[in-house]
Amino acid sequence: MSIWIKKYGFSEQSALIINSNIDEFNKIVGTIDKQKCVKDNHECPKIKEDLKKYQ
Image (cartoon, rainbow, N blue to C red; front, side, top):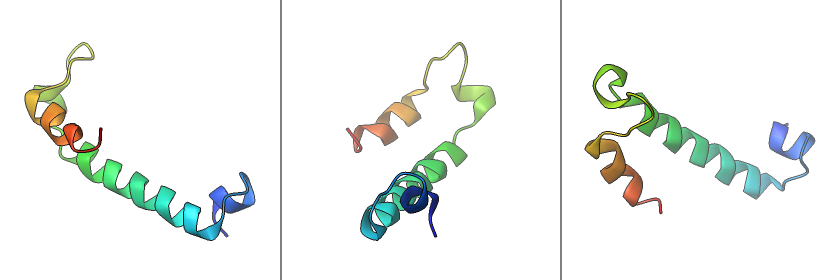
């Protein structure tokens, strides 16, 4: 049983959506070159562009 259902009382459908969103976020985060893009909490242009479609 999903933690979203067990601990927070979400429905099975909502839990699947949450997990899907987390997976998508992790894919985006996995593409970040931390040495080039993340310094002092500033985002590189590629990250900003990728995140626009989620706003």
